[in-house]
Image 1: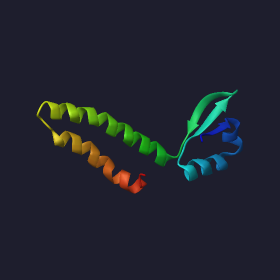
Image 2 (image 1 turned 180 degrees about the vertical axis):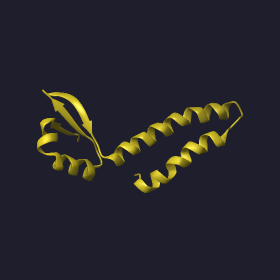
Image 3 (image 1 turned 60 degrees about the horizontal axis):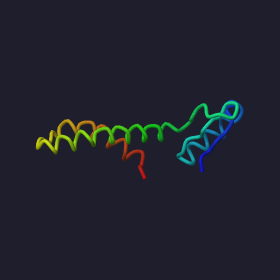
Length: 93
């Protein structure tokens, strides 16, 4: 279930919001006047999402290259190797 809090909690209960984002490994959605305004998440979750987005971006390129009979692994593996260490350090699920 998503964590939804009023934006005033960011100022008044910062420590609690920080505890939630780190303990649950999920974002906290902040509302302003009853409408979604911001999302707060841990740095670890932010990096995981960025890594996932980059990997998804690489997959279509890899498939296109394989379809043409030219797999250029150097271009694919280089960005992946940059993130492999980070993925293992973050202990992805």
